Length: 184
Image (cartoon, rainbow, N blue to C red; front, side, top):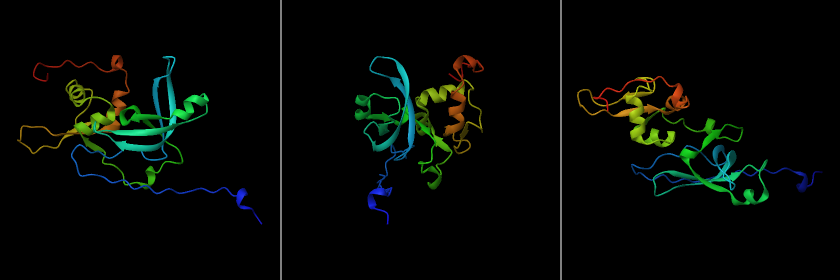
């Protein structure tokens, strides 16, 4: 007979997330237990890359998600492990692993509004529009106009994954396109 102390017991946790119906509210990009990575300065002022698992999240008054992260302990001193960290959505990137629940979730829309896309990409909405005018993004592939024909006011939607890949190209290697006075 196996004693209970010899059994590896995994606990399943259930989380309830209430979603308010407000315009500034966005769905979280990351979920409990997912592994994420980010870069930042350490206590000595040196830049380093870190990883950890999300153990909490909150939608703050600054209209963005903040994540509580338990740091991976592999290369950290004990005093850094005890601290944990809170970071915003724009500072994080997903590290795919077997604990991710993404495959079980309803897929997010590939196309997002300017405000949502800018927040996810970590840039301002104006910077996103400026990069479009400078032709870093291609119409129909990176962005599309969903406005009513003849309305005169564009309503842009952005394919965030494709835009993110375009932004990964260093600025000095991007094709330079002149901006006409009308586009400014």
